[in-house]
Length: 213
Image 1 (cartoon, rainbow, N blue to C red):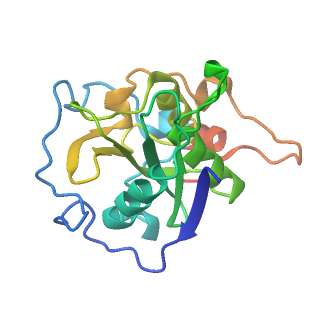
Image 2: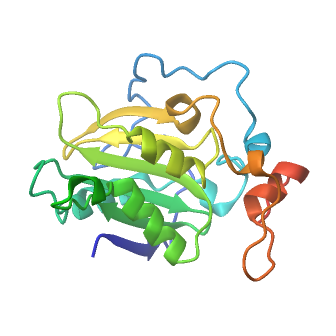
């Protein structure tokens, strides 16, 4: 199984001010070009509520996300590239959803770890991404590919933190807006209604500026 979800009963309120045992330190250096972009679209304008909104889920349990991403990476199906990746996302309910990359003999049919994690989140009823961790082993920090940045954009605000780590330590920290500036998202399409006649949360927040939860 490529994706899995679990609920966090206790989410610490100290956010990024945690030190390692697998936790993110506030001292993780930003990578080149990782300073906040000036004049970027606000989370409300992007159609997704701010990840920093005041709510129980706003505090991020980084050790839980890192552990989930590292553990699920061990289950990656990557017989062709031998490049295993694990990803974990935190949803608006404080649940962690993890996924690994799954390759296919018909190469274009494989998919990334972030895609697996998002599928697990949506299947469990989550609709907002509050934080992301990606784990891979390489000389440079392993960031989401371009396609996965767009997939994350469907559910995450520009200020959503994205942490890149390996199996030992954290390598870099970005926001989604830094990884995908001036992006296209749900607000560009206007209010959307699903099969049950329910208007999408992203579209609603784009019009009102309110967190739709």
